[in-house]
Every structure is written in C-alpha cells, then in structure tokens.
Image 1 (cartoon, helix red, strand yellow):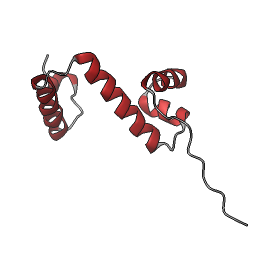
Image 2 (cartoon, rainbow, N blue to C red):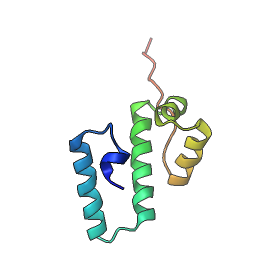
Image 3 (cartoon, helix red, strand yellow):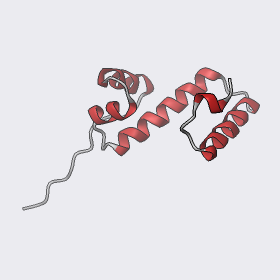
Length: 90
C-alpha cells in the first residue's frame, strides 16, 4: 500500500520525513514493536505537554478515550500529572 493512499491529508514534506525515518529505522535494525512504543510514548507525551497535562483534552485531541490514555500513559511510564499553575503571592 502506498503512503499517499494512507495519508491523503498529510503534506508531502511530512510524508517524505516519515519515509526517511522508517528507512533509517529499518537500516539500523529497529524492531517494529520498539518503533511503535517509542512513537506512542513521544506522541502522547507531546500532546500532554500541549494540553498542560490535562488528560481529558489530550485524549480528545488524540481521538481516544480518557481511560485508554491513562492506561497507555501508565504502560509507557509517562508522567501525566497535570501541571499546576502557581498562584500569585498575596
């Protein structure tokens, strides 16, 4: 299956970068399960950061249930605690 059929809404630059990354990973002997785990970990961590640790917003942005996000975060060893805002001193 060609990448264009799978990812029709992705830009050509992103598709090219993904293709190059996959090729490098294969050349270096990285196993599929390890690649998937690392991708999930980084993608979820970045989305949590984007949403200030808010699991509900992150799950919605990822298109998964909050319980799935919580389970995945635990499996991947991610720190998913919401970032607390510092209250101004009085």
